[in-house]
Image 1: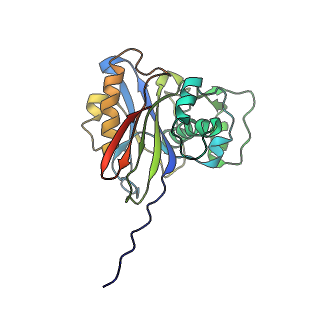
Image 2: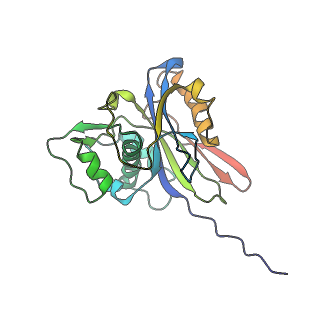
Image 3: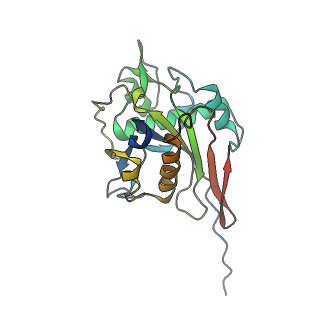
Length: 236
């Protein structure tokens, strides 16, 4: 009889997701994207724009920084050595991935673009804008359970669509990561084919938008992950 050696659990990679909001109260709409059938990861699922953090995200200079309370919360229970640079990198990844997947620019007009060796940030700078982080709010965090082919330690941010510079004319991006965009009420979004975690985030979001001030820089952040065989929830 052969003794099986348990597969080593993948270490979750830092990732960021951006929930773009339009309107207020029960009529609030969220930007969802439908992943193409050819995507290897979650084909045909409706998701928020987002992806893993790249090294350049922690180094590219934003036009405006995170709200101090948002930055502080991002560093709470950060794996490894917490730093403002890593906190900023998470938010920058959310802005970059949103640009890459939808063509929407969350930024501020720049007299001179910030130089970067990273292609994605070169394309962002070519729009004439530098990324803005001051409107982002930290909403939730979730870690993919062990045993999955891909694992992410994802921070979910929210931002008002008012911070989008080109809401009526998204940039045409040549990428195989593009999402088919839809603006949907949270109620309608919950009826779609969603990843489980997205369903949970939307349900919490419905409660948050119904109460003024629930998406402020100091609002509590829900952090969930698997401990043993059970999901563990805590508030940051």
